[in-house]
Length: 460
Image (cartoon, rainbow, N blue to C red; front, side, top):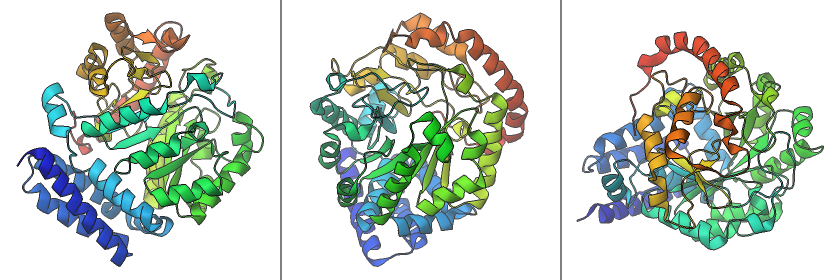
């Protein structure tokens, strides 16, 4: 019996088990433990037993070894409608994150690396806001990706084993075909990053019925900080949208673009407590990056603020029942940079496949080739060959921490800029990024020497 058939049997059996558990059991601890038992039985016969065992340990460590894990699990159960719980546990936590879906083995054998964990897609760059320093602006409907293209990319991703998709923009809820995509791909799981201003009762009901979407609200901190960078009234609209999703028990989180102006506020007890009170289950933290059409280097957090984020994150994880993801400081857990198709890549609204949401350079366009071939362009393969870019995994980034690597890759493979000015990363901004990387190394090297033995060795 081939691996694809076995995968389908495994997935079907687990989905039945999870559906039954959620219908009969409300205690999250029991649900996770019983699912883990089922996966362990499957993994004993699986060709990727070691990888599956590690994935199970990762899930269990989040909920059972973290001091706030069981409280977080209880919040997940209480804040998710049964439709959403089935999809979260069955399709996201298990099928996309632990089991190897159909097509995974074939792709890995052909290209020598696993399929990406997630594909980021920006179907539109249109947005109803004009946020300071944002790269999404000055676009019209004619610049959107068509439904057929997005649908095909996701179908091709599912065939190679990618079952988790991140939808960005622009503002995703402006794109008219968004819900049609969710409906067409019920066995995949989606996360959407949104400004929250277009969510209404009708959309909340649809999300509850579908169950396969988690929403992340882009926010800068409290009202003054959020409205200053976005526009007046944005914070209130986000709070109202959070209340709406909480009412319908649709899972959601928040996303912070950390600048030198909002780092402390966005990691304060008061702000985190507000997010928990509103019902947020996850919090994403990204550093402001010098990309886009209106770059403001004065928004970039200082290296010492980045280190503060790591220290503060550790404190919050030990004391708050919310899953916090610090995109840079959490890099050691995934073996460094995940760009270039190693764990993710970004399809922009023109169809260009960019290695990272923050690197607007490409060597392929998915309108002209299939996803698997685009993910394995010489540019992407060359990038993966150099990962990790530093032995110090606290310094993962080829933009902020190792700018000489990106400059070398651009010089060797000659990717094209996907918008005017994108090449400035390796030209005009290169000197200041070099200075930043040197300062970051001084701060993070002693920390790495202290922490390096606690992280798992990961290459794929």
